[in-house]
Image (cartoon, rainbow, N blue to C red; front, side, top):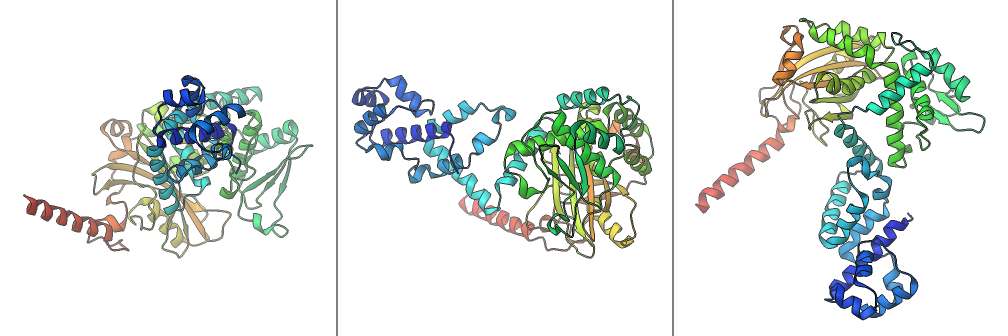
Length: 494
């Protein structure tokens, strides 16, 4: 991969500094040997300046190395991790300003202590390799961090969505419909909307949509099995790309297609825009306030809101993650999505978002998630109903985590995926129940909401009489064994 100009300057500066230190030269001594000013050499070493050929010759002579060695992009073994990081272009593809990081300051940190930073970067790279973390997964993690930093609420996108609705004369009290967005795509943005031909292109059978750019307007290919509400969201996202002027885009949301962080960020912005025009905050917030004031748990009201807003359970819960922190002060929440093939006792977490702090549940590799989670039990319930089940199921549970005693209200929805045979999907929102939140959710005392003690995974769980357990608590046992060894060692030393 080609290295950009800024990184070339940084690599040259790192090499120069390392050579100078290896030869025991101070900046002042090198300045005297090569005839360049001390401040100029300092700027070079910090990656801010790249010298011209005559100055490189002077530096090479002072260091007793040849010209080609000094200008080579190859770093020595101690600095290889930094070289690998720079070669990946992660530093330039990630908009560091979004995370409150000045790129110039980061480069200065790299140049100030290259050996120490190199060791740290090398450790991170090794961890990523061990966990088989691709560059796409790294970008997704960075995007999720960006969302969590802002409590997943973005006022500028909310304002853009409302300006769009006003421009198209959509009354504030009205909920937008599929045909309205389809007409805007066709008439204003010259889209051609077609169905995916699964016989001609079977590789596209599992994706929801594919956008093919063209000079006379884009072609939007849709999966024939999509529901009206799924098409509505896709139309909203396509409009979002154009209305927000997002040029670098994904043409399908399949993971393999993500090439840069900007593409994922733009897809998030377009998706947020779609949610904001479909589930309007001026309509959602008062309805939620009414629901929270009720003293009884009424899942039918939640499913009713999903139908009213022409949306899916996933989009609805994700939209809640936007408004709960901002309008209700409920900011300790998590969102998760699980997939389960009917007849298989395997549950894969395919999406998660944590606001304010890392909550349970979260992704754990090579372990078995607690089978007491409502996100999983609702999938088992759906599987027992058989393939004829088409209605969205909704369940709630008050979960107390055994190790931490943290209490959560978890609301889960489950339904067939719609595009993959025998695949069921659950989406859940967990709300941490501190005293303030308990006072806001009046229905919490309703006895129809079951309460269960849960844990993270079977491998870490001390509930030895648990009927749902499907794996031995091997991690817990190992931890206990190590703790006993630690205590025995401490006693012997005393």
